[in-house]
Length: 155
Image 1 (cartoon, one colour):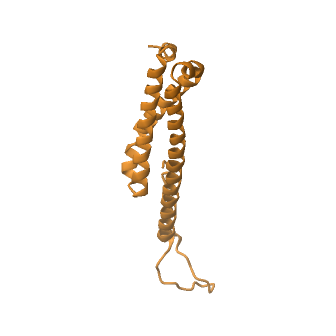
Image 2: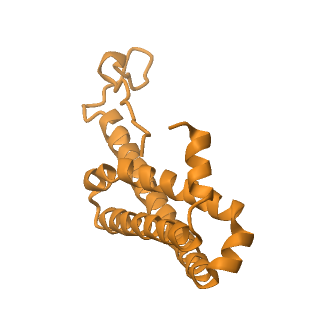
Image 3: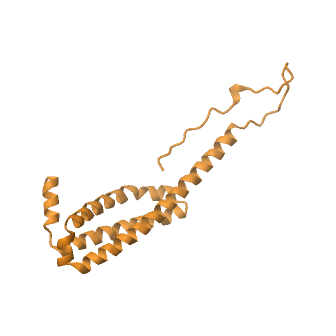
């Protein structure tokens, strides 16, 4: 089925069915985001990252349905006003959940970067005896200094 055919099928769907599909997709997306936020708050970054593909798929599904709802708003107002109102309320809840999720993700990222920065500083410090060279200055053995660490910024 082509993209145009899928859009046509969505747009011609009965109003209450279209709103219900969008509500279901929205509820699933909010649920996964809640799970991710909870895991991130608990410091379970790896477990939270497992939810990313599902969250992306659900977000894509919801956006497609939301666009169809936008295209059909006039018809939905006439045929299923209560369903449309519930969907609007759910969308507002999604916006709140997304803001919280993004805040927790930013905090997790900052904490991770702070830890990696601290580790790099500690690795770079040398715990060796200090001795004076011929010029009367403390010598640094460049062969023993830290060469740096790699940081994966995927989070």
